[in-house]
Length: 198
Image (cartoon, rainbow, N blue to C red; front, side):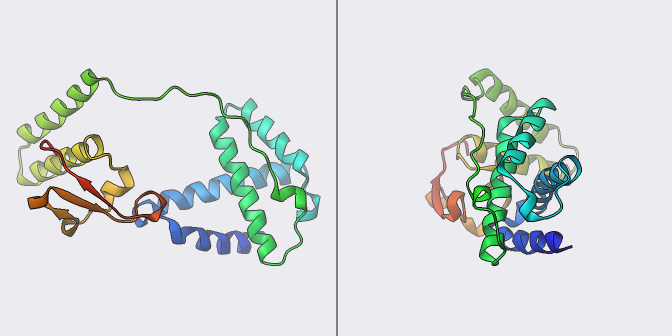
């Protein structure tokens, strides 16, 4: 019971920094990550209280997740989440083993950058244009225009999905071709200058 209560308190602290449009997804990710670790520690390692947790058990968790096919980034996110929660508990004056405050993640494999080739971008653009031209009702046309606008803002404006989701009409200064992005990455505001197509 105390663990659930403290996780709820920790979630409320964390969600102050979450975008409103992403809150539900972040809550789901928060609980699923914490529950994966807790379930492993309780069911497989018979952990009963905080003092029973050892760093070795967390590395066994990482090995287990690798064996079932989880990605290194997912496992590292779980370990980071666990470590941050331990720090939170320590701040709440729980006695936390020091080893649990310094957990090293798995080494990330080198990744090639992912990008769309010009042909793929053209195909996407043409599909969005076709949806606008083929819309049968005013409501469908409006939705198709909004989808096309989102595509151009992602592609040519460099906006992130959450930033597009939270745009408001007052953020656009069409005569200056400027768009204000509020609370972007790092909770910073920025101005985006729009290209002709966007």
